[in-house]
Length: 526
Image (cartoon, rainbow, N blue to C red; front, side, top):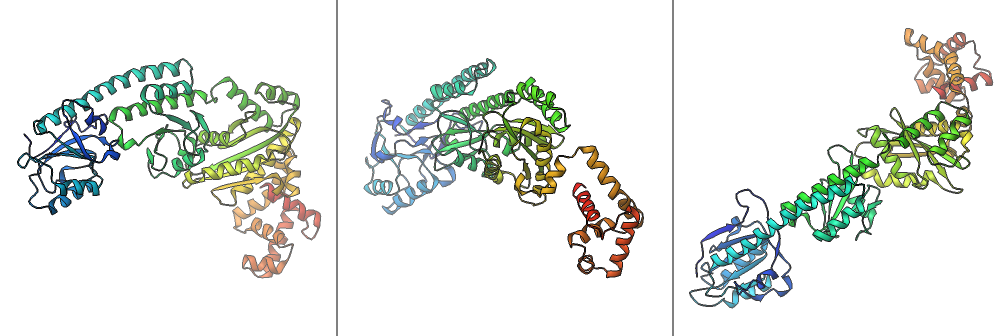
């Protein structure tokens, strides 16, 4: 029997590429080898990726996992050597051992026992079959599988791209991958919504959490035997991206199968971009509707736009305002908001500079704020240092949308001040004066604020007098000179002097309740 001292064989060894997988049970089906299984019949689904021939007692430096090791047992000088040798193979993650002692014409019992103890499948190589023959046949099988897999990948790529360009959607694409490659895949969003594919083998929300929290992607989800791949990691924040979950362990895949998944994620990215309505006619209608509502347009202008966007003008609505602080871009914020809002009927979501504003048609008793809060909390692990502030208005008619926008914006500003990673404030958390201010036209509110506060701000800029801060603190402490002075670390006489200057500059009297209320409202508008 011929064997080399220590050699690893791989059809791609010059390029460093892994080749197509082969199971141990395939060895028993190769008639030219006549291998016989000695022990390990419950481990025959293990994968072979390399072939190594060795006569070293410790060949660990030549092993990296999933090898078929061939040995002539020349390393054995005493029975204890079998334990040392097999333990080394087990620690290296070897798939199986094929052996024969040509000198003694047997396989020692201690080697069989050590293999059984360490769960290393052991094959007997017939005396008339050279190790070189075993290596050649296994490598040929692996290389042939690799060539067939490469041809199939190229063919599938053409068919997949053709399916998307014809508008077939992602469902048929995933069916094609499953039918032709035997690999089941699912497309999901970071909230756990299944975009395409059958019911996943693991809970969608668990897959989403693993995607959001994985230290790096792609990510292997060991308990579920799934691999997670981002769709557009280089251009999209993780909380706004989609991801593909594929059955199997990516560590066991050949390069061709990984390439196919890369093509699949690129196709999913195309479909995701196709569904983005920002540049479409519906998207432009959405933008126009929100701008009309924000500008306070008359109902006869707003109602037709509502109908064109697919909403029922006679229904009732809630307005949602959202902003982010951090790396999340406005377009990604809009994507996140659309994802967490009720999907039926579809919400109307638009961007106003860095703010996302949504008009949502709601049914009686529907808790939009609660639903949004729960969904955003599920995304929180993927936000990093970003913060999301959201305000939700009361339920209104189409003619009351202008006030609802202001109400949602006030609520959102309040939520932004809380400093939480995710903060959602409902309309009922706002004070009644805020609801009143929400219905006042912009120009009236602006003039009211300017007349009362601009003289104080101008004086502060010129004299560094902190009159605005003194006014705010004075009102917060219900007009108490002593508590205001303590809060500002000033003498009471200094506070009295500042209040006197405020009254002189504005013509108001802070001992009067009416004037105090006016100043309070002006400060809330600031």
